Amino acid sequence: MTRKVWFQFGVGILLTLLIIKYFIEINWILEPLLIIAKTIFVPLLLGAVLFYITEPIQRVLEKYRVPRWGSILLILISAVGAIWLFLSFIGPPVGHQVDKLAKNTPTIAKEITNRTEYILQHREDLPPQVNEAIDKAANSVQSIAVVFGKLIVSFFQSVLQATFTLILVPFFFIFMLKDHEKLSPFVCKFFTGEKKAWVQKTLGDMNTVLRTYIQGQLLISFLLAVIMYIGYLIIGLEYALLLVIFAFFMNVIPFIGPWIAFIPALIIGFLQDPMMVIWVSLVTLIAQQTDSNLITPNVMGKTLDIHPLTVITIILAAGNIAGFFGILLAIPGYAVGKVIISNIYERRKEIKLAATKSV
Image 1 (cartoon, rainbow, N blue to C red):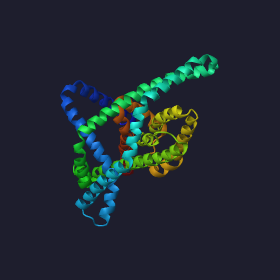
Image 2 (image 1 turned 60 degrees about the vertical axis):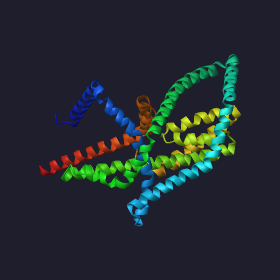
Image 3 (image 1 turned 45 degrees about the vertical axis):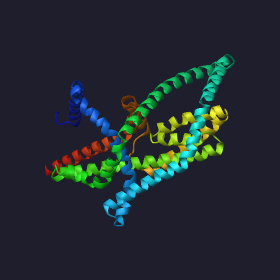
Image 4 (image 1 turned 90 degrees about the vertical axis):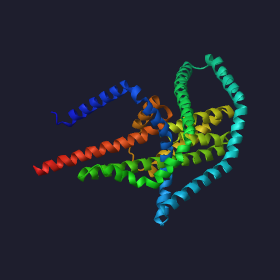
């Protein structure tokens, strides 16, 4: 019985839970290490994202015999230039819309209050089914607002922490560009034979999954933002650029992100003109259908192959456990874990097959 996969898997789970339990009990010993890890984590994460964005450029440059230091220098100059161009062209209109929104915030808040009071005052004229739907919607909105509020607070806290450690980002980024090929040989040198080949393959698969996810998700977010911006301009929605920039960052979160971005656009549209709600919803629907049927299948392909229900479950759980950064890391973390488990399963099959043939 001890050789059965289910028995070994169960023992593994029990041992993992025991390890977690004892780690929690000695938390006071590990707390300084956790503080150091959290301080390093944010710039390391940002550096990794920048690396995976620019790694294809480095590959192309070095294909044409540009030396490593030259490719790094060209990438850094290009990055600074791109940021300067972005701030030069996008910064002024964004600043204008932010100022306009700040000035109109009291008016917007008053308008929301007036319209809410009007609906509540005339509820007795509505059919019972509509009143019941309003109650359910109000309860759902309150629940969503609480969760969304926690995520926003967590997001700004994370941004503040990242700002304090931002100086470390270029160092991690440069060293990843310089020495990224050395990680796999460094890890593999502790193994020999078939184990070494398996570790090398697993590391390569993990790198492929992370590269595909980060590059693909950013490209998808950009394309969705362009589609939404064009749609918002066509329907004449106010604060279109500001809403699209917010949508770009939210679209990085698969499935749930676009609906989070939809909420402020819906509110702005409703206050601008109640009919605008229909047009905003239509633009969002077109963007989502284009993403689901055209963009994501062609950008991501079958590399991740994660069911939408699994994605939503993982994101919601990660958001409650670790806040905004938990949401960002949930899917790539799950994808990496899936790669490791799949490779372990395939390795076990190979070992069993070899043992059967030897007998």
